[in-house]
Image (tube, rainbow, N blue to C red):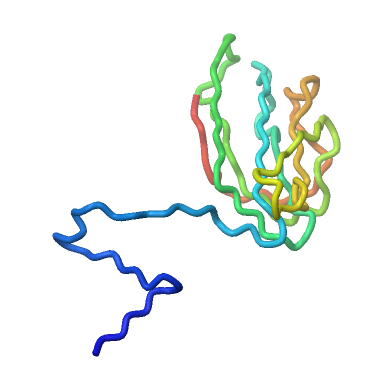
Length: 157
């Protein structure tokens, strides 16, 4: 006699010819534990005199929580002539050793919880900042952090 184990449902999905038929799938969001799932959106206007390596957006984990970024959408469009730039890009870096969040040229955006039932109020122990309109050319400063040597992601112009 065969014994089948399959979590709580005991359902199996076959492979081979049988797999060509339709399968019933139920998508579920990742578990959120004691906190939740949050989102924020920021729109900013980068200037032709943008300082190299200037920080424009940051999320700092202020507690012992685990922050998992499930989506990041970067878009940009050139509307004016750039100075002698060969290659422009927006680069995303992971930083560690965060002991203080940036305090100069910063704005705290509003983050919203994706579902109010069972999720803690946003931003769930995270400090979120983006550069101000007046300080966009220089970027944000004042925080203490160690940036990885390579970008996690890059969006070229």
